[in-house]
Length: 164
Image (cartoon, rainbow, N blue to C red; front, side):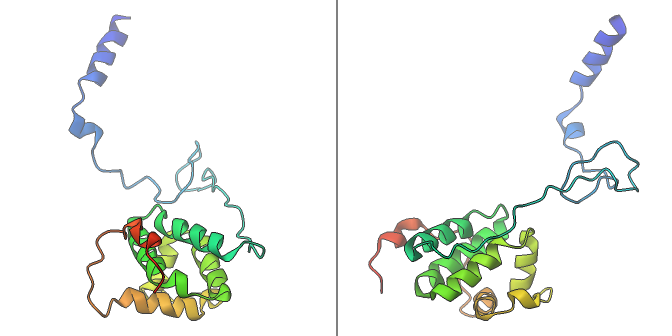
């Protein structure tokens, strides 16, 4: 019992730096849950399946635009939050229904947001299924030819301004 108390004190006396140290390189960088299998077998990596993307043909256009705006702002990855929220502000209101469906598929079908970012920045080739006029628009927007500062998401006040 005394040994357990001493061990407990040793654990409590660890410095914050020791607890915040760098991640060991032996840990996997993939998304998932590791079990007890040997690290090299990868049999213990549990991938969490995402539900497949489904088109919403009966969704009213104002509701679709509002949903896509929200989904463009809440990505879970800062780079795409900035890129897609600013792109949505500039383009959603002028997109046709077909373009809205293409954009919906683009931002919701791939399970990895980094893929979208790499395609938009042309770091990786875009798969044929996503190569369309909306992707061309997104790539052009990403080039930022006007050299605008894109450091934060747009305020939501523009939603209440009259359409131009």
